[in-house]
Image 1 (cartoon, one colour):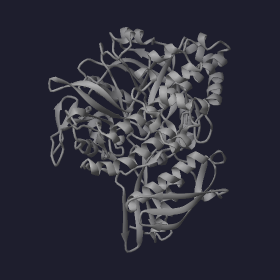
Image 2 (cartoon, chains in turn blue, yellow):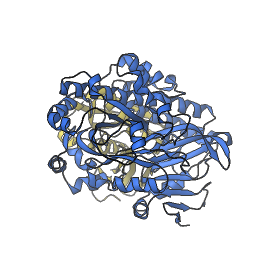
Image 3 (tube, helix red, strand yellow):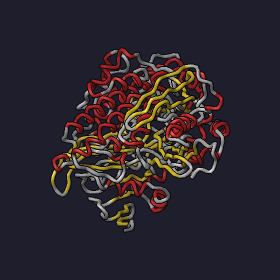
Image 4 (spheres, one colour):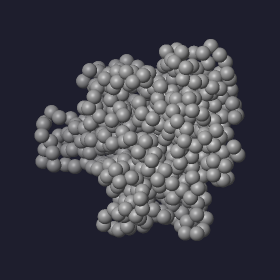
Length: 474
Length: 142
């Protein structure tokens, strides 16, 4: 059985050897070729074996080889039809995602205070291993219950911030009691920290606006200095997924489920184990919403300090906060009827179109902001959700890796990557200079190409392109 | 598979994450060397001398589960105690359980040379015995 191009930006493989639905990749010809260069396409096929999966096992244009699910994978299962939930379809970094802040600053402001801003961010943003966190452990239990709202309740940020956050920064169905003592011990002291790897805080400039109506609604304008924050649920989320996977194996046998890859372990959503997982996932997601919220608040303080003004006068406001590693219960139309689905997005962004009832009123007309960070040193994008999105309202989550970490390390040293970025006018404050080589632009696909493919497949429409000014890396 | 009796592990190329193939003459040595390989991806272990010890126990059905749970246990202890683990010993390995210990140094005292490992996955996991001993293939989430 072979993959076939069924539309300009859509490739499919028919169900075979136990697949319940087709595999489908949204990509340009060039990106599809890259997707075929590793085992990502086989992972799309593996996910098509999920009990209760509907429509297709899908992948976004930034698809690449993950573990179990491909990165960029989207799979929806019909709960009433025995549909499953899989921790592997969410990943260990539960609710990893991106928050974008706008501001009242322009390029000239940045240029005048660049060194002070970077010094403040360098000093205030905990990152790497064992370097502490902004919030105390006292906030933890309320955060697991209420997410970002718990941080607002103690004066970190304001209530308005929550309006521009997926699920208002609080996961419905969170069950803090499902978080193990080990997860609390492992990650409980990390609230308000970036982590490392591909996580970052980046100061950016809105380089070009493509849709002025949507940009205005979002709060973006050409020439605006912005800050993008990429991180997740830290050790608490990693341990929660580890704990839940240990439960899933034996539970699968009880539910008589088999899958081609053990990392795709899954159970019916409507089962004790499924409900327990979704409760734990929701509580870990609450940690992640709060984590990004607290880092955003600290960023405002850093800019205020650098400009010697109050945080209110920085004009720093959330454009949006969106997850790209979650399973959500959502209503979607399947074969002409509205079904209650468990939509897994593993390295894919929710992208609700105009009129969706879950959007805040001021975004109802234009759709949800979709944040697509590029690789370090390259552009990032803000798209908007579209009507008739063919992938359960999902879009790409980034550029997508194309080179292994091992290969990237051989290509260039971290020090020379830093030198190149600084030469290009991008300030870099790495947690580890060595790690910069693994996250260098050449290790990733061209994000502009990924965004073009999203637009061609109606996964999202371009609103604004942002270019990097300064990077704080984990 | 094993072309060097002293080789503890090799790095596997993976697009998003990272992995190793680890070797051991005995299952106990395999468990020690997979632990070494996992932490050596993050820190240059040859340069470290442990100053803190932690007992490590794990259970699991079958050698593959046991290996994943042993490594997951080490990741838990490392992050919980903020240690870069650099010394591993397996005292007892039997069906269903492993007991041993690990030694490490505070992470604030060492430099990361690879991204922190978030978790051990079951993706393409294998543990095999051949005439030269044992080897295991593991993919880690980073």
